[in-house]
Image (tube, rainbow, N blue to C red; front, side):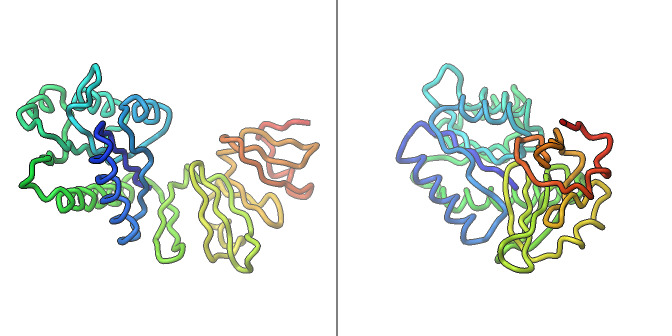
Amino acid sequence: MLEVFICEDNDEQRRQLTKYISDYIMMENLDMKITLSTAHSKEILDYVKANNVVGLYFMDVDLKEEKNGILIAAEIREYDHQGSIVFVTTHSELTYLTFTYKVEAMDYISKDQYTDIQKRVIECINTAYQRYVKNSYTNRKLFQVKSGEKMISIDYNDILFFETAVQPHKLILHAVNRQVEFYYKLKDVLSMDSRFYRCHNSFVVNKDNIAEVDIAKREIIMINGQKCFVSNRYLKGLKGVALKT
């Protein structure tokens, strides 16, 4: 999923920019979400440092902080090398700084009255999304599934486990940062990747993302703390995984 970040200290401008983006994501059913819309750059920096992110960033240049938006973008670039950065600003004279700090901005959108900001924002979303999809296909093995009217792509490395849903013939995929419900058979998941293991009649787990197996409770604890069940008959296939008795 392509994550979107908005950093703008003007409340009304931030609200309007957020609406442009959220409306377009919903209208086009894009595999994107607005992760943060804030006046404080530290919130975005803290998130990017703590998570493996490929993002689309809409940054104001004059943030009324110790550092301007271009310097903040340079810090973001240290952690998100593939992200797309867009400056929405009245300070076009400062664009030379993006070359000084090697920010590699996608675009500069002026806040002046002559600019169709919504049109430019949508163009940036489309370009960033196309790049994201292309890079995802090229660099990563993706699990792709249709959920509702949306085609979802999830990195195999982020998959924790699959479980059968209450609704017949549906599964719930548990990933590190999301859950997706879709029509599929649990037995067909097993053949997709050697890391997938049938640990219970209702669960298939990604063995690479197991943190611990609690034998007494018949539970598997994943790297993010989520849990799924394991039955006695399938315990032997988890040899080499951290076992807790």
